[in-house]
Amino acid sequence: MKILVATEKPFAAAAVNGIREICTAAGHEVALLEKYTAKEQLLEAVADADALIVRSDKVSPEVIDAAKRLKIVVRAGAGYDNISLDACTAREIVVMNTPGQNSNAVAELAVAMMIFMSRNCFTPGTGSEIKGKTVGIQAYGNVGRLVAAKAIALGMEVMAYDPFVPAEKMKEDGVTPAESLEQMYSRCNFISLHIPATPETRGSIGYDLLSLLPAGGCLVNTARKEVINEAELEKALTDRTDIRYVTDIAADCQAELNEKFGKRVFATPKKMGAETAEANINAGLAAARQITEYFASGCTRFQVNAKK
Ligand code: 3PG
Image (tube, rainbow, N blue to C red):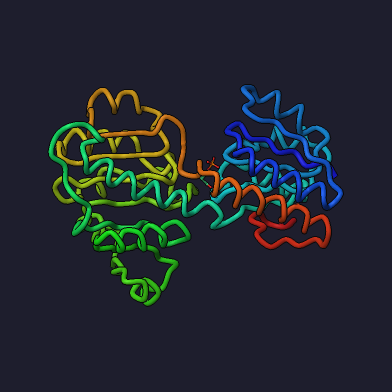
């Protein structure tokens, strides 16, 4: 089988080597498309691929249509909002993610962002410490739990809101379960977002929630830009001259936010949450193993799309 690794944002070389080793040992061929700049390059490369490994690369219905031999797509990472699940299901193509494999890298970045914003974006001036402050974790999944543990180790108080996780589980971890999002936003100096982009969450973080933040409150986004209502974020930052926003996924209106709000906002130049050698190796190799297992035994553990 031909396995295409198509990554606009390439994996570390060690991850690519590991993917190659796993796939060739199982008798498959690996093709590599990195740093591509036009959709057409992906359309051409997928034409004879039986399997596809991607990161945040867009796997649209057009890409699926061009991939006549495709049987499986693995998103080497957590969020699969970049993949057209319906188009894959219609063709009986299996879609998987590699949950948890890059979580630590993202969690470390979320903590780093809290410190960065507390220290004037590493520019001169008196900052503050995160010890003794409260962070609210929105969605207590793989990344959220790691942020909580790291925050506790740094002396922070931690709250979490997740309707899908029992309060008892949070309490066992030393985390206070929030009764509602409103309660969490009104009590936390930092809110760290870990929700996926779904029809329910898109645009769900807006003025009403942000207005509840205590003085100097800061929203930390290592999740997806789509969960933010950008017009309402801008209004909240305008009306509340003390609150702040730090993100790993620049807003569409980021240039305007930077211009208007200066050091109260910060966006990384390119999403870097999972940009560590460790995360690349964990997620890339997991993707390769999931594909070889699927071809060897039909194992569909980690499938995220509906079966036809
Ligand atoms: C994920 O969903 O796994 C993260 O957002 C990482 O995305 P990336 O692989 O594009 O860096």
